[in-house]
Image 1 (cartoon, rainbow, N blue to C red):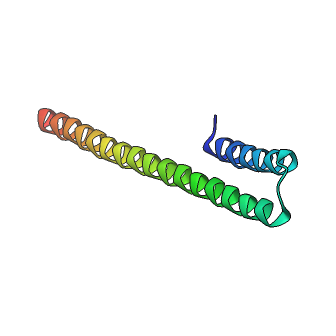
Image 2: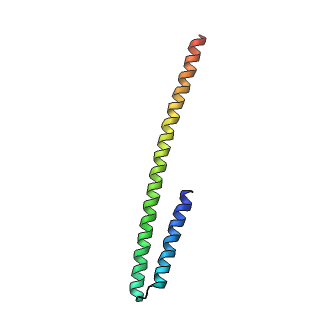
Image 3: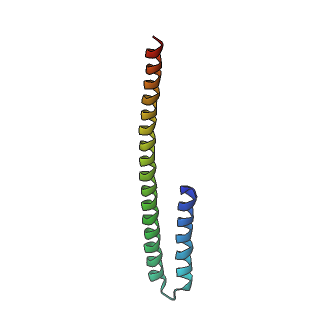
Length: 88
């Protein structure tokens, strides 16, 4: 599952939950608006946290791949140098 689909599902689920809570809660309009505000803020905070975590993981993977790429280039260069020395 892609990160974008996960985040979209997460946000949509939060919104659906908030709407269901509003429709099923027998409270005053002011209390309901406050609940919506709090629920929206919580959903936003969770989405931000998920995005940050995904970005950190992507950065870590990118750094690991760059390091492995550099090691591979060095290894290939060593093999090329070795072949040149054997031919000389």
